[in-house]
Length: 192
Image 1 (tube, helix red, strand yellow):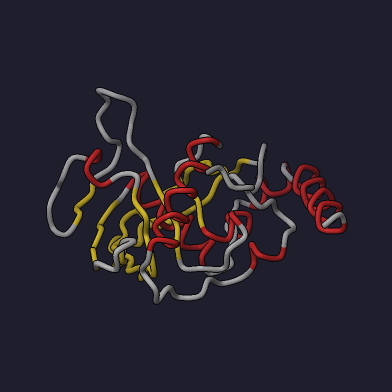
Image 2 (cartoon, one colour):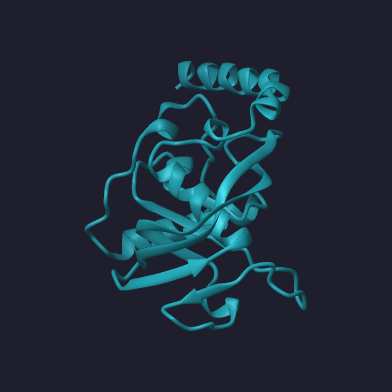
């Protein structure tokens, strides 16, 4: 099922998610709905706050087009399985460790900020300890786009947005669009 993506200005986006303690059918369905929503919006990641839920849950899928080489390195539970076996991936209760603090700059976007893109510095290498929808523990180490995507989504889970990290010049360039999104959200919330 496709869920509504919350937009900048809605308070839920600034709420830290609650840890998930129940691993049941409802959680699996929410994760599946989030994946459907992410694909529908042509995104590569989606956090629970973006579907109006303050939970420690996000989904990611950064598989490259068929036949293309993945533009990142990764290890899943110490192995290198094909991405098709692990993606889309639901990441629950993530704990992040920075493996390589060297920062890389990349132009990011966000489904809660349609039409807003800007340069963001993020550490290159990360380790993410997390649980899947059945409560099983996993460790994912990644760099490149996968590492960046995880950091972006985990920021959401902690109430932090990519505009908080965006280069000042890019933030200034997007100021009018961001204000317009905030006004539209205010109008949407009034109409609820």
